[in-house]
Image 1: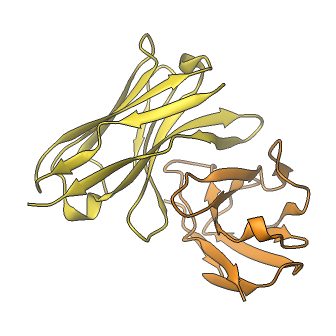
Image 2: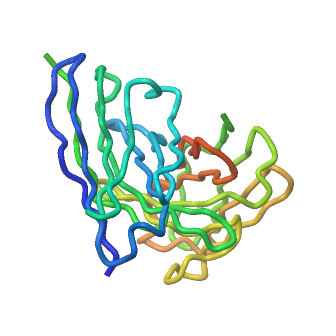
Length: 120
Length: 107
């Protein structure tokens, strides 16, 4: 069974850092691009960041560019999101997402999310 | 970045209604448009990819279509389990952007 599970969320002060992890199982992790999507309380879905299968290319939303870094360890089947210079507007549930390709790209498996809170 | 304009924001409806949600891309994205359903406190669920291909296990009352840069999600006969928020998302280029969502609620 395909599963992705996020961890590492929590409360951090403004300007602080946090690293999220996403552990994958039930599929060949190195064969899939992976992404992070977030959802602020009461708001819609926002694309955050993504990384190709071998980590050779990364992508970021303008809102996090220069502050967040996505990476992966294919030997550990784990995706990471290093978050820095955190702001109140980064408060959200962060989802780890697998991207499938079957003539089109789409997010087919989502984790349950991990909450990030930013407050002094 | 590609902007996705989704409408309406809220859609009051009754069981049995035919429901249509629209999403427009700010530039040509061919058929690279996906639809997701999200219920409160849950992760989104993929319904349709490539504008019109139904994900495995999704009921056939859901369908998608495209005309130029306009995409439509249709629920042919709304069921109680379908009251949720729906999002479109383009997968033509990075960053993968979402529409703002349409909440289908009980009329």
